[in-house]
Image 1 (cartoon, rainbow, N blue to C red):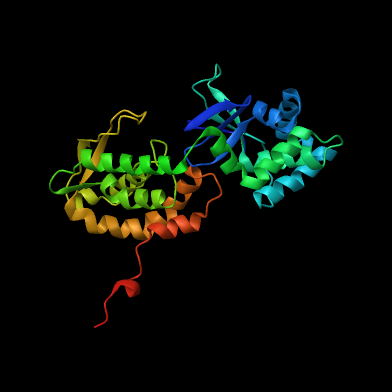
Image 2 (cartoon, rainbow, N blue to C red):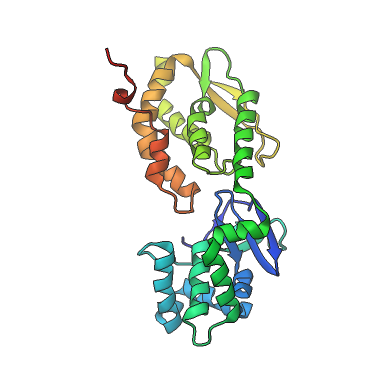
Length: 299
């Protein structure tokens, strides 16, 4: 959770009771630094200074910082403590185009501190801590924003369907999107919103193209060709040209896909995209083909 800018735009973000809050495409909720200050009943400068001192490594050696370390470990269920209390996300409604977003587990740790451990506890922190602890912060923010995660999941299925309907491979060729639909469907089935920020076919295409070139597969099969690919209108990217590969190479591709890409490349792609603590091995297992033993019929 090192501080960095994410190439993500919140699917919903607004102020509720003067507290800026939002939801990222992966479903994770956040408060802005100033929203967190309001949530905890302290001056914005106090939280901003804490965040700055934390990033410098100075806050952690003080009494408050030591207590926050323990609370963050408890709320994140991890022995590792982030080097920053926030990440930067795009915000089209801000003058600076950036929001300092505090992830939900860090929000709860800091609110817990001001509700129970500060020298002078804050009634706002106590009240909001109780509300968030009772409902779960994610559910609490969803409710305040009138946000329904299943609406986003339904939209993901529609976007996938639209890409399938609008992108038919030419006879005798296959594309990375054709072969990535299983991965995309698996992510959506696991309640992960898939939009223009998560496109496994792009990752798949990069690694397969490298393998294709390194192994000289064009001489073994036949040349790949360029075709147009159409994105849904909501995608921010321009429609690209993509590679289409000869169907004669499909068997080789699927062997590489199962033996190299899924176990070696896909886990890192998912770690980079899915940042809400979901079970990465579970997401990987969801796209692995079932074992032969589980499918073969008894003779």
